[in-house]
Amino acid sequence: MKIRKAVIPAAGHGSRMLPATKALPKEMMPIVDKPAIQYIIEELVDAGIEDILIITGRGKRAIEDHFDRNVEIHHALKEREDLPMLETLERIEKLADIHYVRQKEMLGTGHAILKARKHIGEEPFAVLYGDDLVFSKRPCIGQLIDQYEKYSASILAVKEIPTERIGQYGVIQAKQINDIYLVEGLVEKPHPEAAPSNLAILGRYIFEPEIFEFLERIPPSPDGEYQLTDAIQMMVNARAIYACTIQGEWHTVGDLLSYLKTTVAFSLKHPAIRAAFREFLLSNEWQQSDSGS
Image (tube, rainbow, N blue to C red; front, side, top):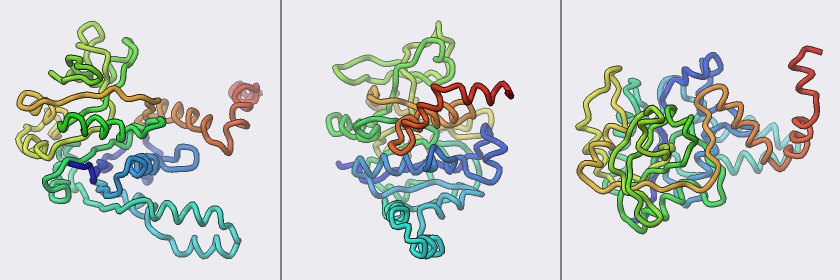
């Protein structure tokens, strides 16, 4: 069955990015000239998915406003005859058919995705986390869709990472079968010496609708949240689940240092500023600023 729908969990507080996220949703933090969540929406659209459900929470109204039409700004741009920017905003407003459901309590990613059940119905769907951005020729979620069309089973995105960073991620225990992995288990933030692989789970998934049955059965974690990884682990014991190594550059924006690194990386790819920005980085201007001279 064709993947037509996607879910983006976006209800979290963004506490690792405070105080910037006190009033601004972390998904709206700008990466060069776009909020992070716009890159996610564009990835979906480029992969052929235009029915998108965003799970929001308190203080997330800015996400809805960003993809809605702003009559006042349109009028001001027309008055200034700034047609290029007007066309840019109109393109954003028409990107996809975007729906919103509120997660009233912050009870984890599993709880958030379960709230999408009525919208998804009985069909496979994509899940994308807003903390992860992937720069690639073929959209990251499109690569998973390609594999889903071969195997007709739930698929996780993974990426090889250096040994010293394994303890920062969930990793899979898996058996390689041709160009894909059969998942045998998940290990959350293992010690490098005890890790079953160096394949970290990236925030992209294709799920069969039966994932909802497992989400309903998982117990809460010690902090009271219901985690998607627990449902996946339960599902692994009952069904075949695969993992696909993604081709492309994986960037994260969930903490300050990662956010800054991602901003630099995307700036160096931006056609309007990359040359000047690269020249700035190669100069000693920023070093002088750092030293206070």
